[in-house]
Image (cartoon, rainbow, N blue to C red; front, top):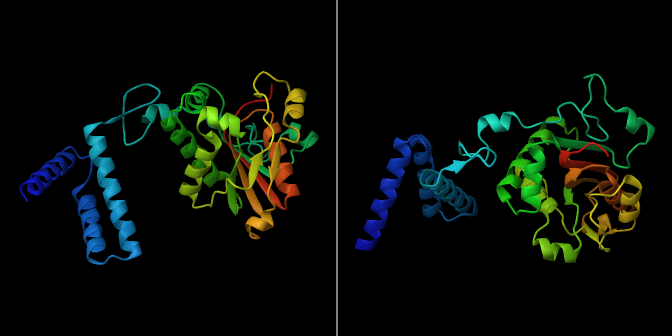
Length: 291
């Protein structure tokens, strides 16, 4: 009992510290405590979810008070976010972009760029959140090769914001661009899948990583021209029948971290279309101009 009392007093002191520093409001904390008491008194599924949410928010607030976050770009204090407000405001966003490739357009009245009018991509629409310039290239590299998950959270948040602003029709599911099993073993995670799961959580869209898979190990696309990229990706993917997974998955959004020439996403799109997808959207965190 003395140990329990000592631990309770310690938690009370931490909560007082957070309220005094204005890291969490008293009204918000009272609401969370009330939700927790309701969950303990009535052990229903919804109340258990409220209890987990209350404990998660309290734990995050305590951690932010003890170990405050710092901006992953400049190192200054960033509050509850991974980027400080000045760095977040200076991210190179695409703004008004081509509906087919995601590259920015000069005139607000334009919808499709000249390159897509000449050669139309196989997907139906595309959304790119950021331009692949500094510091976005650093965020992508640190997330992809340095296993910095905070950079991935920033990219996923920006992509979710862009999708909310530009998406005209919500897809039935999100499908990440798969990695070959050997590359997945070496990298230990698929960056497109992490982006897709964070995006699906933010937008309440189911993520299906079991539909599309890679059957052939390909060379890295960086350093290859457009022709070599197409040859490198040809026949690299296979897809399970969409109807076998769910007959409702007619509109699929394919997720990747960066689009340059669009060869990888084009091969994924054709594979999904052959499997029964009626509409395919291409969503990327960063859009790079074609070399």
